[in-house]
Amino acid sequence: MDIVMGFLLVSIALLLGLNIKATLAILHDDFPEPMQRNLQLLLVWLLPLMGALLLLAIHRKSERPSRKYREYPDPPDGFISRNGQRQDKFPDLLDGD
Image (cartoon, rainbow, N blue to C red; front, side, top):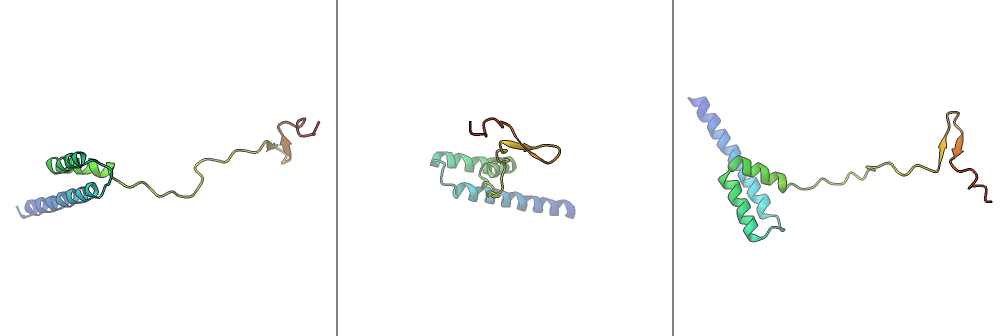
């Protein structure tokens, strides 16, 4: 019986902490209208686990940019052949005629 009671108390404490974290995320968000904010708070406290997880997912902060290329830069007009020599795609346009 003591194990069940301990598990129950830990579960309630974790759920309460999750709801408090979701509530603070909602209250610190500047975008929603007051009615929307109130409905989000009701959702968190009426459906404790599902509401808190859903609203924490919605209110999570975006990731910081990595400052690395996400796409490869455009390839040059020429390419390297199998023997290692640079070959131009349009050699007649480069002659200046």
